[in-house]
Length: 399
Image (tube, rainbow, N blue to C red; front, side, top):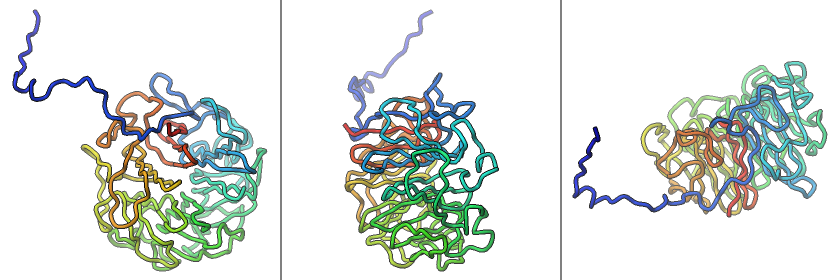
């Protein structure tokens, strides 16, 4: 028996079906190349054994320059290694040129299987290239590693370590109390306006060296943001969120006259203009309605001016990108917010609208969907996204 549906005529006339395509909210950005796992049967799964091409939960990515050429560096976090491509890959699943942190491209495990803390890493997160140097935030070894040149061969040993006395030490806060030269889960790093910053996440603070990347582990930072002194490490200074506190500072970026910190645990990005010479309150907040609010908005439609666990941010040519991680999207601003409470983003990657926030749009993995994006890097008309939940890095290009 055929079922007959009755439709209210007035309602049909008031809201006619539209055949127009949904509006494009991507701002002209589209995926160019994918590194890591393909979407087999709708899922992007890591290989059973690591390879030089596939990734497992990458949390950091950097598009940089080394000796005048492009270089791509990825913190392949789940495989406890760092991968380097000399030149921007031109095809999907392209194998890397160099593996750091493991003896070969098929090994895994923290500290190269537990045997080598000098070459091995443990859940590396932040990566960057500056003045031909490679810098790695070796988060769960509670240190930052510096290679004086980007390695072109495997097996390289870092030249400098920050956060520990030497490459053999890996305990949080150097095995003692929090101090100016110790670290606890340093997840994010950045060179901003000639200054070097570390998001010392476990100590709920940001460390800054005004003279650039220090090459001595005992060089104390010139500024500590988020805490009243070098020995303190309380979440939000042991109180509610304020314009001068952090819960989980996770990434650092900005310009010569503005510093931005992704304060993931407070669901916001804080900004200072100019760079603060001492611990002081931020003058910009993005993702919350004011400096005292740290609300998570996990359910229902999202908005262009709200963020939920923003783990990364990147700046280039006056533009800003924020990895709105738990909303499975990247928000883009065509110009940097100045001060006060930032307005909503101009474009969004990974979702069909500003209201949507599903992992892979609550469907199978596609080339332009995202699942827990953790790391970002701008370079001209490209932006690389460490699409951690999909075990891949996607390099997008603006058309």
